[in-house]
Image (cartoon, rainbow, N blue to C red; front, side):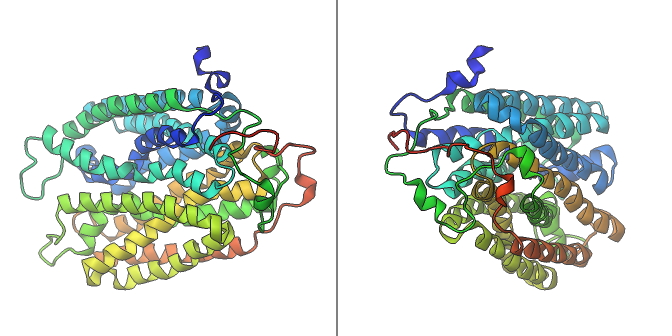
Length: 464
């Protein structure tokens, strides 16, 4: 298996760095399917005769394992390189779908927990961090743009997975034309099998096309001193071991946790939520299942676009300032959604779109924020450890929303009022994150590594 080693992926002189983002996107667009789980959530509730919380646990386990595997395997990914990491991620992610489908066909919910949740979640974590530090090293002149390119695919995965899943569910279920149709468990099982094959192929493409820069490579015309001159951007380096001992790391942990918890609650419930917000007195919703599936795709577009646009903007505004927007403006938007969202579908869609764009932007900006504070040495491992905040949010977000909803009534009978307590809880969380971000300061010198060279120093030059 030596062809997976990092030494086999070093780019030759003159390699075009713009060939790297497509390799990263190939992986992130696949694992981003996690955001499309709401498309078949109601179908799994009916198939397993389970509650929203029980089915929501599948998503929560996956996100928990994403954070834990990223934290545990972060140093391994940095040392072994992105090709080996992407290869392993593909095996776990596609394997999770295969085992999950077996659980659906055999009506064993625990197998779906094990497959999609536990095993697939490991693939999520390794696949998520595998291209991030590589792209930061390819784009030291624009780290926000780099992390936006690396991570926007994860947000955009549902943009593809949602309509494709809806189409395949209709194709696999002969009763798809019936009124108030809910997909059968058999159709969801076949969907999982199909996605396992497709995602494995695309992720392998990413694994075999990724390259890492040579140790002395820098983009043509890049002046590292211009980067160092910005506030909160260090020219020093902090190891992953020391990073978790700093106050800065834990402040960012709180920031990420609050931002993710607020957004993930909407995403995990996106399709049924918009139907419930506009449910009429007779129980029917003004929003059909097909339109709700399209709304999931629209939120995926917001998630994807926010990751790229807001993260790239942070190169100009600074990371701390952009997080003040995510959390401060996000607080106001959540309050408006809770109080006035049911008034018109247009207002609801606009508010949700902007909120999810901030959610995506927060994910894409955090690696660059870490790079600014801790340097490029072991930034991938530090990022992996910080993603435990995502694990915690993956439990908290769906649990908050689903617990409130289960207390209000059964799926298909809920209204906008049932969501208001959960949305107001998210407002409080965003306010906590806003305060935490205000306290972020440069890392004290006692945590710096001695004589660690700046990645991309003036020792070499290459084409951009």
